[in-house]
View 1 (cartoon, one colour):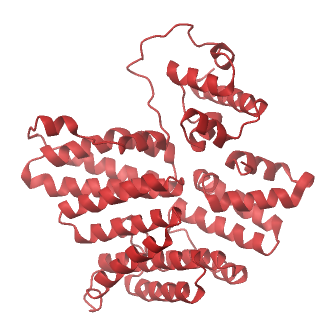
View 2 (tube, rainbow, N blue to C red):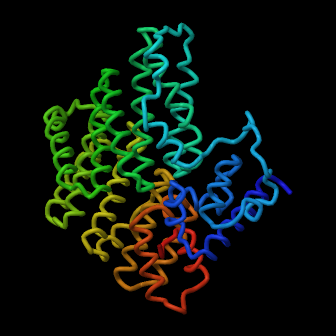
Length: 412
């Protein structure tokens, strides 16, 4: 049996034991000090559980002996293998930002004359590729070692390289903030966004500071701190807009400004302010016309198509399902990331559910799951509409719907 097959078999066993105990993935995760996402990934065979202490913790949470959970587990502790696979859920990334990642360097400063910039640049690009793809397990595995390396390098790199290392650190924290928001870890997203702002300022990257504020706004929205979200977004727009009027303004600056308008539209939509939300969408459209397509400045994916994706989401938030579907049917999202494509399909599913078109809603959600599984399975809005579909279907719920509800833990 291959390692992957063993993980899947183990995951099936965990899921069966959890259901026998009458626990949801959220409840089991809380008992273990983990997230529902971690439990979900264990049950799907994505998250390896190799450490004996974690196996024992999981067995205790499930109310079974270690041998029932994992017959192959040793009866006595064994030394941890140097080659053991690291945890790869965002729990590991949360731990990375839970303290200072370079305390040893603070106590014993030393300049590293070796330039690791090419390798660091490559790793940061990979981090953003994983973020855009919604592959959060792999993202966490990459961030675990990368964040401490960058934090150390920002203090030990030769002076000539220090600014670029800070810029890479800012981009990494921006990715981490985006991922935490998408996995409903908004408090951690707040910390990551704040660190991104600081790193960008140390790099002398003014636009990077505004990008950090954009990430901070989304964390505030997830925390339902709409007053803070509005204040942060409006302040950033007011500061940036006065520099973005001339025709000579660069596309990067316009992309940041347009993205902030979209963030403020989200805030107003969540507050139920239809006029203000639409005003911000209109402003974003005007900026997008100046930027054009084929760009991804600061990994914001700001372009005319992405503005319309946000317009769909805004319409759904405001209860304007017909408008959302009319906008969506005209969109070609091939230029966008998997995360953005999945988000559009998810919002189309929400719109169909608002119109009681339950078959179309399920079809859209299943298509979104195929594009970016974690985006759908970990999003509160997706869980809410899946829960509604299950309740409306009752005993007539199809196997596809029941499976989607189980995978997303929608009935927790």
